[in-house]
Image (tube, rainbow, N blue to C red; front, side):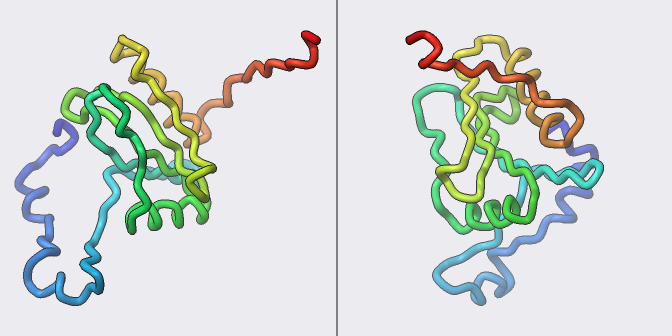
Length: 149
C-alpha cells in the first residue's frame, strides 16, 4: 500500500474492535465498518469503498449489508459514494459503481473491456474529478429512435 507513509504510525493507530469487549455490545453480530478513502474539496464530499476484483467473471454486485445501508445514508446527505472494483496493489481499476439513494438508482461503469490500465486510470480520475466538481460532465449523445422512423 504505497499511500501509507509511516507504517509504524498506521499500526499504532489501528484499533482492534473485535477484542477487548467492544464486540459484545452489538446485536446480531454487527461490526464496525470503515471507508477506504474520503476527501472533500469545495464542500464536495467523495467516499470510496474498494472491493477486490481481478477483472474476470461477473461478481460485481454490491450486497445489501449494514455497510451499504450506511453508505447510502451518506448519499442521502449529499455525498458522492463510489464502490471501486479492481486490484488495489496493482492500481488497476476494473469497474465503478456510483451509489444512488436506492439500488436501482446506482450507476455502474464497466471498464473490463478496456485493456489499457492507464486508460482505466484516466477514466477513474475523470469520475473523481467530476464528483469533486473539478470538471464539467462530457456531453452525452442521445439516440432518438423516432428520428429514424
